[in-house]
Length: 429
Image (cartoon, rainbow, N blue to C red; front, side, top):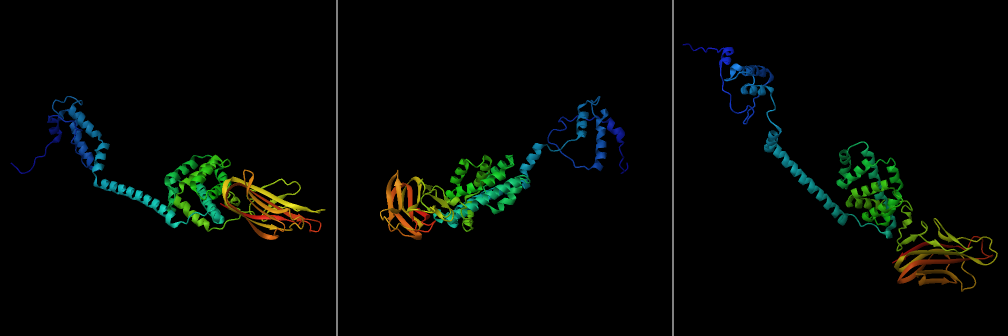
């Protein structure tokens, strides 16, 4: 014998083996995968090809033999793990489990952060932001209404512009660092703008800005009442309504309160809020800026008119031949309201110099056409600028205020004089 190994002649040996066919199918579990690179594969696969010979298997007469078919199936190759196996692997992967845990924690943190923001906004409204101004602070109220409206208008412009060029996610990344928006409702505004095919949307929004500002002013910045007024408007287009209401609803109460606070300190142009006429009777009517909703009575040849910067003024009669007077008579009607007092500031020139029984000035509160409170200044009524008179109503219910003023004119009085001017009316309830 010798210690040297004798090499087997595989060309002969393989063909002479009568291998029994394994009972399980070649793909039956449990399976095993082998790592092999391309260089080694040409040798290993080449060797496996010997197993497709009929001589390699017992009872094999042609290539249809079960074992040969199994080897051919093996040589086709396939992915070692199917989708179900990959999912099973992912479910048990420590890395995946850790990622899933972190995501869940992040979702919890985000939810908590959103709640914290909501709590902060509530606390901000209660503890930080001053209360909204009232009609007693008309300039501050108008300035706040103007600022809030401008900010909502700017938000609409931003959404319309960005919707044409960027994604909603990119839009949020640019918008949200400042906070103060409900993302869900903001998405509705975004989708509305994207779906809206009106090329004049921004023009329609801009043209309705003054009306929306007036709604904020008259509703004392109340968002719900303002939203109802916008929706019920007969002059704002339906597309502009959708944009305004979407922007308003997407802005949180805290952000609106912040805007109102900042706006109160901003300068505002005179008459920016339509003279403050909101159908509210218990307030100050600055007749230098507005007509106050008063209506001129038909006085025939003697008449009056409202003049900006002056108020309601009687119109002088030129070239008077005989004694006469310039008369100012105006009324304001309103929903029946309990009135405490009415203060009027007026200017008056040339009282009557004769017939002291003639009324020079009278001011009456009425209910259903009947006088319920009355102040009368007859001869010798006061002359001069910025006179004051008060009607003490004492808490009676009224639905009309009537002001009558008569200034004397005569041949001895210079032409175009004899004026009566009403500058301001303050109604206290």
